[in-house]
Image (cartoon, rainbow, N blue to C red; front, top):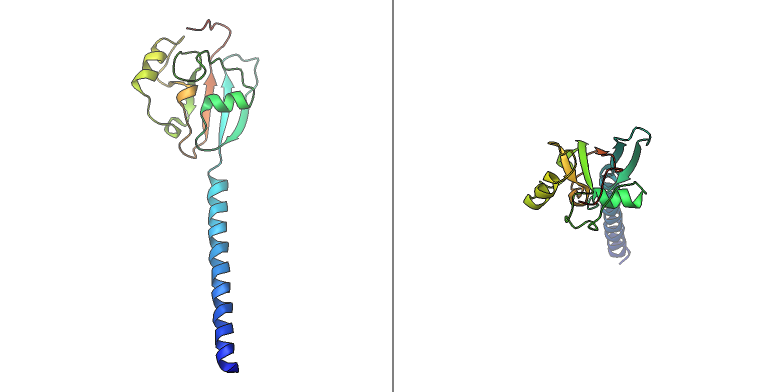
Length: 146
């Protein structure tokens, strides 16, 4: 009986040990993926009086949301629903961090002041992967809500 109890006890102990190891491994994998998916965004400004700012970001956030959360002065007259061009930005680095541009967004970019090949609307740039990015915010003083 003691031998049987010892085998059962050993079995339970080994099972608990390996479950704990598996849980630990899952936790370590999660922590590694979590901390390695933290990308950064650097806001640079055409207005040279404004200093560049860098923030940590996560997947699912839009550049406009990040700018608003961090008190970055970026117009968004339509409220961030791709209904204007006031949140127009230039993606200097990390264009692959976002979904492809839609026809609707492209139409509004055509109406923006000084559009370029790397122009996007901040409200439509939702972070999809963990690449670091650099965004240039055009001079906001000339915007009149078009």
